[in-house]
Image 1 (cartoon, rainbow, N blue to C red):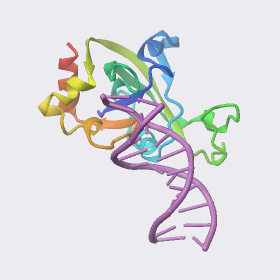
Image 2: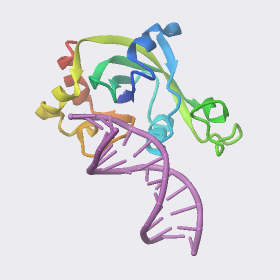
Image 3: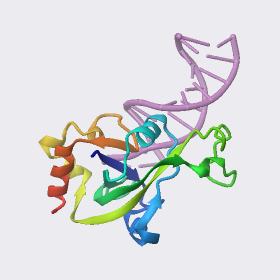
Image 4: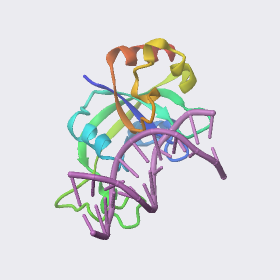
Length: 154
DNA sequence: GCCAACGTTGGC
DNA sequence: GCCAACGTTGGC
């Protein structure tokens, strides 16, 4: 099993919105970065656990856990001219972008802020706190995952 | 809103 | 394949 950190801007899509979705499940669409896409397409598997991270907001940090419930399939928003995520270079015959489905699992009793992560020595190797690292989908080690869960009160 | 750091694009 | 210009990310 693999562990991941997924970033989302809460103004666009928050952890609470995931919880309020049908079956608490939503498609992770709109990823338009090749490295993040490759992770989704090749390495994100059903049953993998996801740290749900809120970015670009007053309180950046990890809010809770989600689980991958469907593996990569074409991101249809890339074919939709009305969508903000439209990409003319992606076609149904040759889709360029992919998405997975994730399901809300558990909210942390304690929000784990970015500041707290930065203050934790054992988490200094996380991509999240590395200089210039902007990937919206990042692999997380088992140890890092477990430590964040413990900081979150699980 | 600023700005540093990246990623992507496209001319050559 | 180089690289300048541009766009995006995301913390502050």
